Amino acid sequence: MTKLNASPVVLLGGWGMPQRVLNPLAEVLTDVGYSVSCHSLSGLESDFAGAWNWSTLQSHLVDLLPEQPCTLIGWSFGGALASGLAAKYPDRVSHLITLASNPCFVARADWPGMDPEVFGMFLEGIEEDFSATFQRFLRLNCLGSDQLRALLRGLTAQAKGKPDKHEIYIRSLRLLGDSDARSFLQEIACSALHIFAKRDALVPSRVSSHVQDRFPHHQVEALDGCHLIFWDQPDYVASLIHAFLDPQQP
Image (cartoon, rainbow, N blue to C red; front, side, top):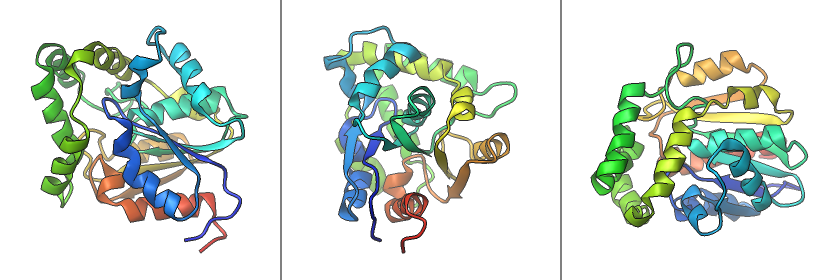
């Protein structure tokens, strides 16, 4: 793969995940010449003191973007955040890509997602037994991969969680539970690509068809793999991203 005159690439991570979890994808994209930076919600406790709502969080995150229009890639909850940024700041985002990201993480009457009762139990678990619940969450990220054990070992080593910062996890988890990025996706002016994993244990696979039906002008891809799709299928994901950004290049 080669790239020419591409905009800088910004990666936004998912709920509870440190920035380094994004490194495998960042490295693959850097190797073919993209300029990549990574950001994660779990690092915000040191420099974000605002209320945890969409408006204040977006106002903080936009300051992390380069001045020139960028390609914004969001994984999981990061995809919803990226969609909001693309809608609110169209002059800062030239392309939007979401990875294993459900616009409505918790199911709605007209949209598939995590069962509300299951989500409520997960939130309760994070509040009452952070370490055990977080470890189960890591496994769900890898469940569905043919490399389950290897991915789980690697992810556990990289994403240990911070029980002493559990309030950050709880605030952001509540925001995730209330998230509905469909209006953002309807408003964006830039090109958009949504990549889903068919064996995702956190985002139902049928979300991909809902996104395609609701936003027919967006590109949607679904491939075998787990929620941690850019670890499970790094080269394939990178090739889809490259083809989307540079359709004339091999």
